[in-house]
Image 1 (cartoon, one colour):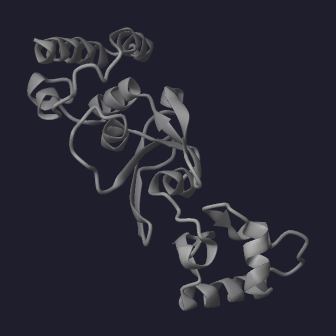
Image 2 (image 1 turned 90 degrees about the vertical axis):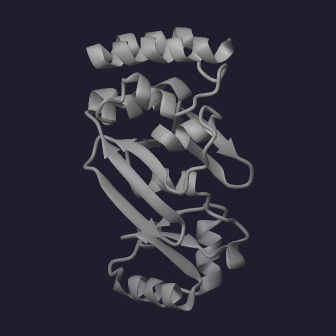
Length: 207
């Protein structure tokens, strides 16, 4: 396979699986060897086993870390501090991308960034939406209220006033009705307590 053929097959996709190139082939060994050569030459970027992105120098498409995060582990969605920063709930920029998955907790580091995956039970994989990045694609990201409750759920003492105050949440960035609805769906005392503490803190911020 020629590199131009790879570009034609991949198109504008920011991330692709090597399985895409194996279609109709009885022996994919030759393709895998070619992929390894392209990685060494810097033409494509290895994100994890069997997952790649074309170097933006050749594709004109820069793989956004939030889109990459969705592709590395499936199912998953961006959440916790990353989603809170995206929605403007917290002021700090976040260097790594944190996602929620029903798979095992793990961390990947590659040329696109550092990607952290935190495990929850499958019944907690809800409360996210699709957002788009012009010219790059779309990705799944938690609503700000779900991202906040995901963080509370995963962190020891995440429901406490000191922990929540440390986040420096922006007043007006959280929907109180949706927060209460999501907390009620969770059905845990820790989450219910956190929701009321968050509402109190937001009310103090508004004064």
